[in-house]
Length: 317
Image 1 (spheres, helix red, strand yellow):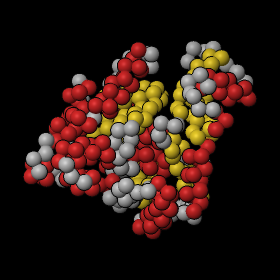
Image 2 (cartoon, helix red, strand yellow; image 1 turned 90 degrees about the horizontal axis):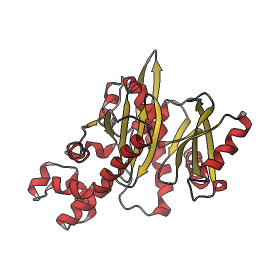
Image 3 (cartoon, helix red, strand yellow; image 1 turned 90 degrees about the vertical axis):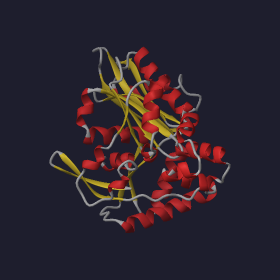
Image 4 (spheres, one colour; image 1 turned 180 degrees about the vertical axis):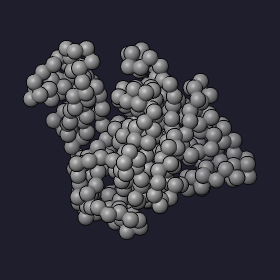
């Protein structure tokens, strides 16, 4: 959770806190644990509002751009729905849908951003927020919140083509931003849990023990753990997903080329991950640490973890 404030052209963080969920938590208990965690987090820092923005992510969330003929505003949504129906197997009547006209790139057609999320995911977020005694102001999408976060504190990226990875525990958000515009958005099921599973496999230990060893580099040599081998074996799907994202964006002329790759998220702190990805992709992967520059009395160890939360904190009703 994060609360931010704009002062002039700069941002400062008023409050930021993270709660780590128990490993292997039963799905039926998850929502109650999250609700209780939110209540504890609110009391642990200087949050001064009950109005919140939340986001959803995962493979079920659709973020697409469509080029359609210029139409009256009241006809745009239905036209985009027809386009979206061609690229998804999910019935659109089961989804919450939003559209935003981005512009007229060729003067004749309009470019529209389409966002669709399963209604049950949106309703679940609403119920969790209500149960935590908060007021839901905005439901956003992880990848768009990431873009907001990047542009707010690294405005120079609006002049470049940037691929941003948010590597979390169970998934990675992949977005390609070209000159300040969203060009590509996808999520892939790679996260820190995949690295932990490979440590567990190599050392033949419990998942909890593997997680502990993974997070403490001094224990790697003590346990005869070849972490480079662990990373190489566990990141193959991530490397392929990033490679395909770049290939798609260049062949579809969404970007001429990717100027740089930035990585954030809790797993981005994994020692050696940036170097391994750089070698595999033949392009330097840098940790994105711009949030560290933000003023305020907050725990800067959370900088890699709050990229999405900070992007949400910037949203206005």
